[in-house]
Image (cartoon, rainbow, N blue to C red; front, top):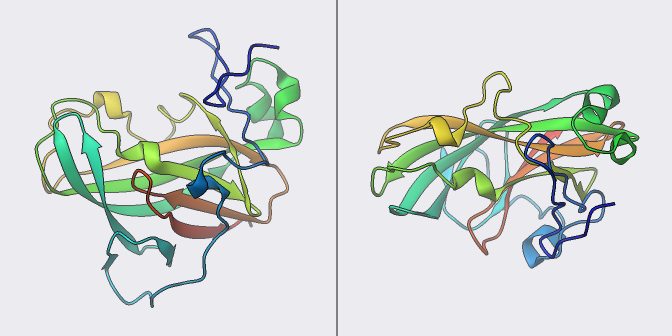
Length: 200
């Protein structure tokens, strides 16, 4: 077994996807340890201010991200979670035993640049995305979603400017029999926004 790093991420060869060890146990920061809060406002508003809370499907949040080119305000909308099979998950990790009873879940999140500088480098907006399953945080897979249908690789997006929208995806391992899935997104050190998706 490879050494456990302080960031809860396993070191792995370039060709092997890295798997965090936070599966079903939550992260070690205050944001990840929180459970889903109660809804804070009705779903009638188009976009919420940056305060966190539960949102309806299709509803957007507004948040700021410190990018290399400066701070950008984004409108953020979790679109869906694609859930794969245990067999697919086993192919994505170095040790198939890490994927026993787990499935690949891909969060699709749309980011619309509302204000701030045009980006000359890849956006870090997707770094605030997480998937939770039945109240527990999934295990992050590095690099698994870049070529998933409907997903864009942030490294391929250049000149991300005001008015532009892109869909960035994050991949996690979650229990294959999870009954409910959540996409959470938050600003750095902020309260998470939460979109719930039943696993049907």
